[in-house]
Length: 374
Ligand code: SF4
Image 1: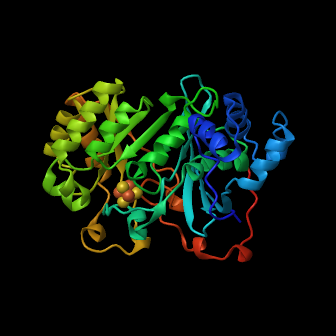
Image 2: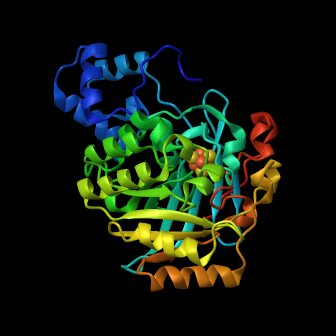
Image 3: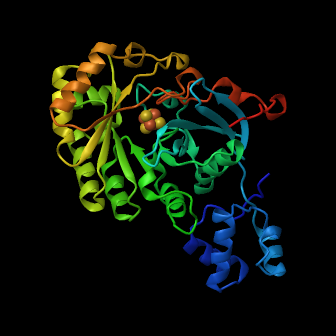
């Protein structure tokens, strides 16, 4: 169990470690913080005694003052398509889900393995197509808990993560400081965790946070959950749109591109009879042409297991014919289009389906952790 009332240690950036070592341990040499940083994030060593280039006295002080949090894997679901969904227990007894999706070959012909990470326990937003919304917000994840999802997924499977998407449970921009803290560590060339171009953060659209994020210098890819081309429909599907209407959000996305020069992505789930018309496709292409971008068209994955009500209960996937026609229109109108796969649908790990299955509520003693094969 984590020692109470201790300052967080793991999940701190290099500059924060310098300050912490000074204030808590009286150590002012910066190279000591550099050594710790390398042990924690590049070598992934979490026992102070194993940090052999630190003086014994400092190892002892660190051991006394700090502990390093753990994510405990409670269950791993495996899809027929190779997707794996991890149910992790946090130290306060809450749970999150993380999904590892194998997909097509990368440009260099090596396999791509994308990890979809969570940033919150539950989510305060109420997107009608999303199972996570049914959980409401329990709390933000710490930077450590965000990082540990990557480390644990790699440790458990023995597979190297090649791409990272912040599309799991929660709205990343509502856990801004810990998102930025985790990304600062992940994208630091010294940690060799992942390159900026292999990371995508997905947001429901919070304009001020998007602009701040552009100024952080992280230069990762940004995706907007768009899903509608009119305010009327978007507000029905995503109530956050009432607070931040379409035009404000789209302007923020343009600003993100202008600051970072990273093409942006618009995510668009196709719902039968709601947002799948020819006019919708034309409006969507018009949005996509404003700055270099691509549209990621996503099949709707039912969330019946959350017992949805209202408009959520009426949502249906677009028919295959409409889906194809919609994509053709987008392309003919000049939009760059990709189609999101439905990986992990059979284990409720596909886009919008993360909601902590009932197994999350089982006590640790009653669970047998399944053997994992890569
Ligand atoms: S889609 Fe994202 S922002 Fe919307 S409720 Fe689900 S987790 Fe939250």
